[in-house]
Length: 144
Image (cartoon, rainbow, N blue to C red; front, side):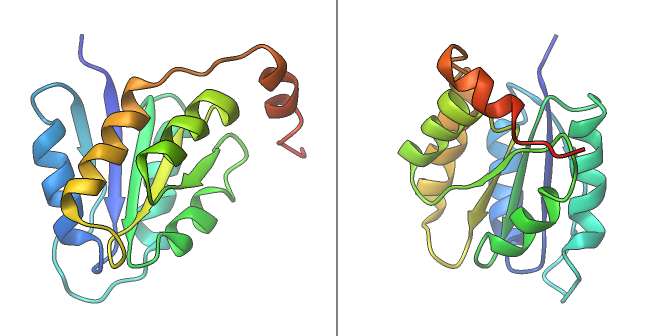
């Protein structure tokens, strides 16, 4: 059974979303929450449903893309069970999984190449949480 991955973007991340989605589609079941064009949109309209799907277990992990990566990350992290890391290099994605058990990442389409985006996604999806000393820290993240 293929792992389920949520993906969402705003208009600035649309092109990268399509590239990442197509790249992953043979190995993963990718659920696309939009946007579906480069027309200007409000990213929370797409991020909240994607984050909810990870939060409730419908999707195992999630990938978010916008111009800076910040807006989508801030929005996703409003969800109690989401740990979304802003990743601009593969090493950040690796550490986000290893140490923080990140279940979503955000990427800044305006600041990284398409090739780098694929490398970041590969590291995120191929790295497991290390647990151990990090588990106690992760357990303290949620406030309610």
